[in-house]
Image (tube, one colour):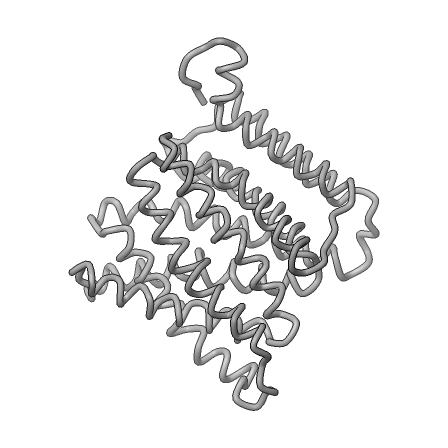
Length: 302
């Protein structure tokens, strides 16, 4: 990747790592459904403005709308709600570390559900390392106590949902839809579900007025982490390719941890740092390029 590509990669890691910071601030004052509803509604509005400015048409065919709905459930509704819920129980840094399991679950799901993305020996070893990292994170904790274990389980559930979304999302390429149209579509359908749900369950109109910090966190979550993050992601995808973009998974926890320490006063213990190190090593093995460089070989094979 070029220097500009790496710059975009760092910006994307900050945008997506920042979502854990923004969640951590907002969840102190607002309920889960309200946070997610604000995130998807504001981001959908921003992306529709982007589409209009770019001259892109939003599809209204039944096939596209049904696909958007399924993608919204798998890529927004389930994981966003689980992550916000989990962050009410665990620190943002730990939530971001668990989120780094997303490509590992994606590969496992792809191995079962697809014919062209099977797991080879190297990827299998990387996956085992990733799960070993999760074991490290869970080690020494009281599994019968609620709190942190439930929060971690919720965040892992979000990564599994992201894995299914990654596989389902392959059909949008066959449908010939622009990536930003897909992003706007899934967020629009998410907003149509979450906004009524938030008003019915959370009744945000009856809650005390949130602080300026909470409102700023909602705006950052929607505009920076979601609308801005998708814009950066698809631009980088076009420039550097999917394999290079996947490296952002290693950078997001670093950004989230540093932001959590700087703004939320969080601290990670040695177990959590060790868990991230093992998960990160697993992802590097799966990526294959570092292994190839160290062994003096060419391009990696599955």
